[in-house]
Length: 281
Image 1 (tube, rainbow, N blue to C red):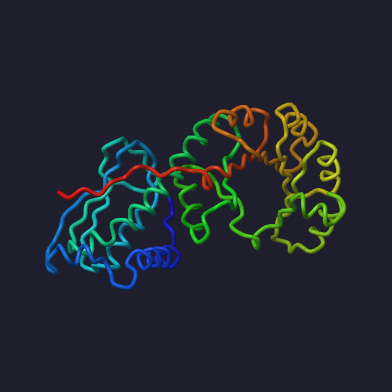
Image 2: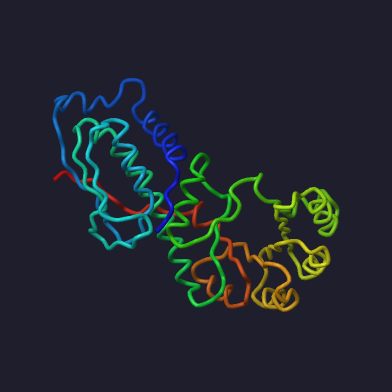
């Protein structure tokens, strides 16, 4: 079971999206064409196979405009579905349902797209110890939802923001003067619960980092041979993360080098939506 996101995280996103769509005058099409008291029954259905994420967005979007709406979820977040699968049925005020439709579909489709792509990466490394993790390359304002969708797809979350882990990147190293100096400063400043990760670009930087014993070392754009050598040199002393342009075609080979973690920004920054529709019954 996927632990659902707290209502306090999801509701503001849904409300902001509804407000953006409704504008200053509301749904003028619905107001013009549909009697105020009309009811409508409909079904949310997947038009392509995928992995479900974001059903709470559907329920909340509709409930915001019709608190008496009846939404019945037929699947759960994290479920794989086939093309044509019914995800949820709804019976609600017609104006409210059609006003909420686009917001519900936009959020559901994007989150399902992320979960589906994540599952493809997770499946590609099945049988290896490597974990697939996300990055901070998320849509502004949607990070909590998009990282939740990664979990629905079987992936693992990297840090959520700048405040929950120290990650020393190449520009931090440049500002400090060296990998070793950057790690020393970070470890001196970090609290006892704060992990320190450092990005390295070469095997010589890896050796410099290992001498300072960070918690995690990110191997940025390493070749497969260099990844294997990094695993050999590290010998399990720290967690190794492979990163940089890793695709579905290359991720298996990266996992087989023996790295512990593979971070993939594409799962959130370059993903397509899963095609989902709302059809009246």
